[in-house]
Length: 138
Image 1: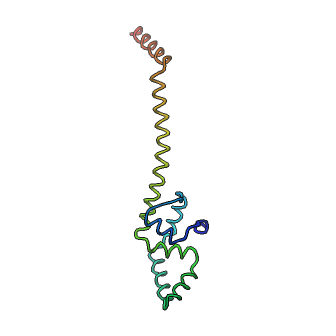
Image 2: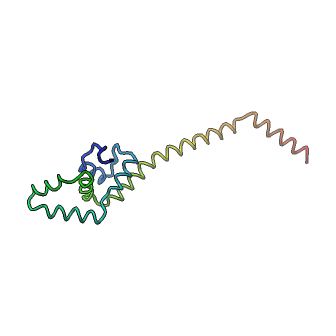
Image 3: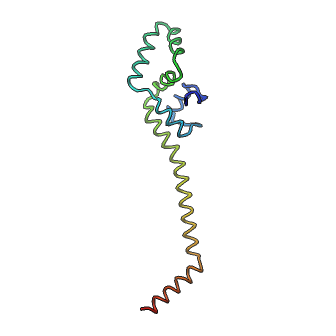
């Protein structure tokens, strides 16, 4: 389903992964694409099928054209070195920016709260009264 929704050629997608450029892909799409990476067995099977069908360049293209979208994606990703690791890096990069923004919003809120506490006249008066009461009790 994810492969059908993408309006990107699989060869262009393979180039994006090879260059570690996530483009307009979000983390959900990156995770889904990573799940469809070919396993060793699938790589071997696709290679074997293409080799068996490739007596000529035309027969090779005909065999590739007979592939479904998932197999075409796998064929394109087979040309990318360390595709799984590159997907992991792209996911980390995408998630890092979002997590950093969330964290910075919390830090900003905390800094503002600290400044309000420091500037509060009513809190100073209350603390002075507590100190005076503590001194009276001692």
